[in-house]
Amino acid sequence: MIAMRPGRIVPRSFAAAQLRLETTMEWLDYDPQTQKKNAALIERFMNMRVDPERALKWRDVPVEYLDADRLRAIIEGIFSKNRTVAKHMLVAIKKLLWVSIEVEKWIKPQDDPSLSIRVRVPKSKKNPAWPIAIREQFEARHPIGTAARTCYALGFWLGNRRGDIADLLWDELVTEEIELFDGSLVMIDAFDFRQKKNSNRHGGREMFIPVVDKLAEALAPLDRSNGGTVLKNGYGEPFSEKSLTGMMAHWERLRRALLREKPDRDDGALDQTGRYPGRVYAPWPAADLRHLSGRVQHSGPDDHGSDGALLNDRDRRLCPGCQQKKNGRRYRPSHQCPRRKARSDEAPGEFANRQRLISGKKRGNDRAPSGAFSFARGPAVGNGVGKTWAKRQKGQ
Image 1 (cartoon, rainbow, N blue to C red):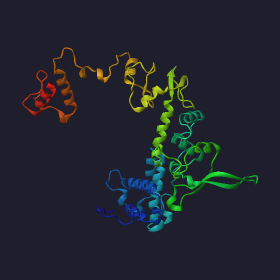
Image 2 (tube, helix red, strand yellow):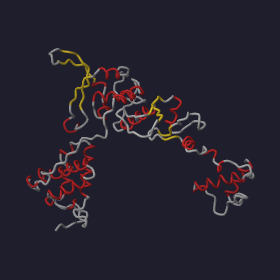
Image 3 (cartoon, rainbow, N blue to C red):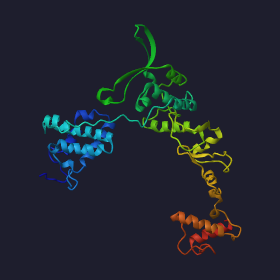
Image 4 (cartoon, helix red, strand yellow):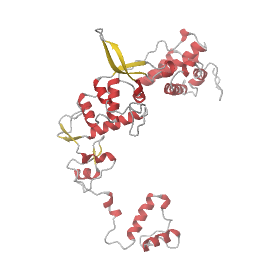
């Protein structure tokens, strides 16, 4: 029988193991991102119920009550939805078991319930390497000297994580003499640095990566006088680690914007070059890239060609005017809407009344008081709203 005491930690429970884990030197050696990820997984495990019909959670259960069958049921329940999360959850629970076995000696090593459980994650196929055709298009869109091309070259030829790419310094570019397999000595340029991963534990793994000709060509026009990071933004400041993901997506959208498709047929899937079979691709004219600003700025439905300007290149959608014309409907921009245009049969001031009613429905704070509005004579002049409206009608 487990006695639950609100606000207090049950001795030798998983909650007690969590508190002890966060004070160990092994936990303190983890980088903040690793600590945050494992803490979230441990908290998720703590809030799981031991029995779906009971209110008892694993937080208040002694560690010795967790056997291999219960642990396998927990991991398999997560495994059916996400294999990667199941593997990370098992690693997080093992940390609590490690505290109970090696640090506090609450249970014996042979009683470890995780000994017989293994989670293997298959190699991901969601993010394949870019084909040569895609790489050539990206290089054509982003010339040497731009931040996009520099980031692309560092990531492709060094094979580093995004954090190592963002933090790479010019001071880490060295010239060293190395010995080749045939015994000859040559001088090469290389990046000599330490990886950011596990930097708190052992300083990070030391890396020595030679600079190939393609990478040297991409780095040649860059300014090295001020030192600092190799990759800089338009203000001369280094990129943050997380911003590189969004920026690469943005630079890739600019590459796709240079392609205009004229479909000969609608069927078929993407081939290895990233295109639809049976479709002809041609570069976008410079004037047709205006949709990247977020608005289609053409003056009419026909000034951008028969294909229409793309409102969202990622979803391949047409602008509203071209879409309505394609569907056989009349193009009616918002400024030509009958509600927003004075009719010839309207009396003077009636258009303003109607516009105010439309605005009042949209903005609750500016809505006229109840009973103070009329299409025939406007708002009652006896209140403040009516006086303001009367002044506007007189042009004051």
